[in-house]
Amino acid sequence: MTSSNRLRLTTVREQDLGVTPNTPRMRTARITGESLSYAPQFVSSNELRDDRMNSDPIKVNEQNSGAINFELSYPVDSSPLSDFFQSLMFSAWQNTPQRDNDGTPDSVITDVADTTDVVTVTAGPAFVAGQLVRMTGFTNAANNGVFKVTTGSATVPAMLGANFAAEAAPPAAARMKVVGFEGASGDITALADGLGSTALDFTTLGLRVGQWIKIGGTADGSTFAFLVSGGAAKRANAWARIIAITTNKLTLDNLPAGWITDSGTAKTIRVFFGDQIKNGVSRSSLTIERGFLGQTVPTYIVQAGMVAGQGELNYTTEQQITGSFTFQGMSGAQSTTSLDASPEPPTSNPVLSANVNVGRIAESGVAVAAPNFVRSAQITHNNNLRPITAVGNVGSVDIGDGDCQVEGTLETYFGSNALFAKLIGGQPGSINLRTTKGGQALIDAIPRATFTSGTPSAGGKNQDVMLNLAFQASKDELTSAHRIIDRLEYFEG
Image (cartoon, rainbow, N blue to C red; front, side, top):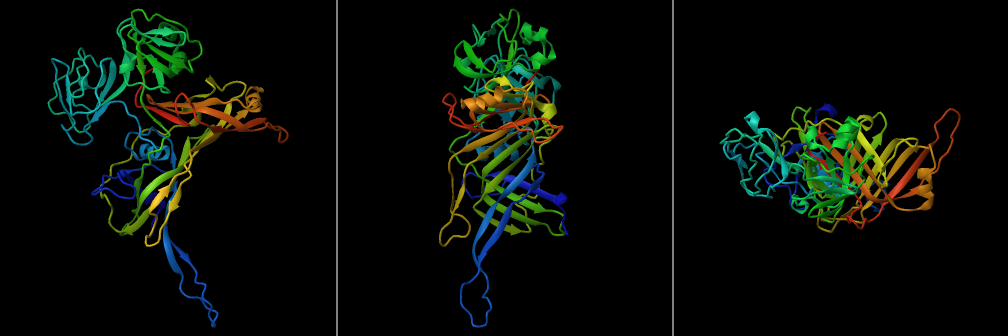
């Protein structure tokens, strides 16, 4: 016998559709259930027999498909959840510069100098002056923290003033990640429609139009005075979206309530940003292995060429945020030998919930709040995949993709006609949901959305009247996207 509690689901990203890497490094996924199917397909013979019996069923092909259910947590880079989103979005995550020893000491990050505050790393995307780099996993406590790059480089960035301790062989867990930027004292200002600077060049920092930023740090000296005086809630809600980038100005929308101009005098303002992904046209596939470890000799079912055709996220009051990915695959196999006997453990980031961790649900740049509070929200994403089969081949020879359909619902209390009037008017707007926990954040945005149906109704006595609005995404000309997801590995405030 075996038990669902002994299921281990692991994944690895493929370079070529349907081709599992040699000696793959498998990573363990966090799931709440699965309905993956590697199964033969049979048809019955149509032969006429005088004994009224049937010939043997005829195997005609094999099917590889099914769903994986999960509770939402921060999608750590290269984790199964991160790769699932990448496959669903038909696009790669656009990561901020990072280096990670990733289990092998002194391999990517090879030295930390104390006198010059220089970190030596292998070549990759450059760290730029003004960026904030979060360093974790180093042996010396002085080398862990958030530091400002003073001299940019792809291999020897300097963070003068960090007061590093010498570390000639950084450990396996050592990691560096750009999480934001910081201006010189008094350099970054709050404008009526964004942020300005005198010395800092915003075009050099790796920012993108359509990207979300968190303005202000934990220290009062890194936050505008009006945010400090506004209290903890105002500081926590100092988020905005970039709509234009020039040398000395970031134009923003979705500015928080109460945003005003501020000269930033004597302040070294911090701004946090992260990785981003938006829907595209580049297919990304995975090999997925299920191990039934409760068996005396475990069975391992491998499915290759698995592409996320559909995805769903559900936000419901007083519930954890849940979702699912439905996959279409190329081929499968089963054996008693795992692809990786010692896969990477699952991530440990906490599960997110709708009431506690959703900081904002906005429609057309304004938070949906009283009297039309949101009771539930859902986003569905469909790539309209189809298996392509051919004579002489078992399984699929390719996976065809269709159009990208992003739809969803907002179930709100019918406190006023504000949202219902938008439905009747038929004017496109936008929808975004921001979720935060433990200094990490996800923003799921539909930059151009139109309400397509919904009507208030009183179903009976002693009930709240609800408005269940359906919406559909269309191409946003500013960002060239239906859907954009930002993830911030770290932010303050």
